[in-house]
Image 1: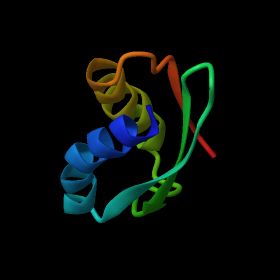
Image 2: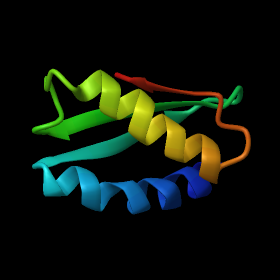
Image 3: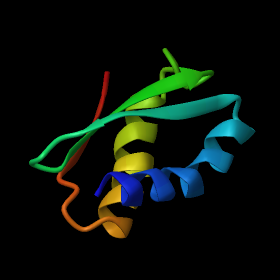
Length: 73
């Protein structure tokens, strides 16, 4: 699942970079929780929670079977 998550994040990255941000994969747990670190303009942005849940989590759940949740660390 790790490789699939990394590939899906590569699809999301251009949108984040267009706004001055990025995302780093930290961990994928056995129960499907993906932990990421938001970087650049995304780190500390008021909209980061929305980006995480409505953007990153939505795409990962669509692209990678078994992803249950995405958390920022």
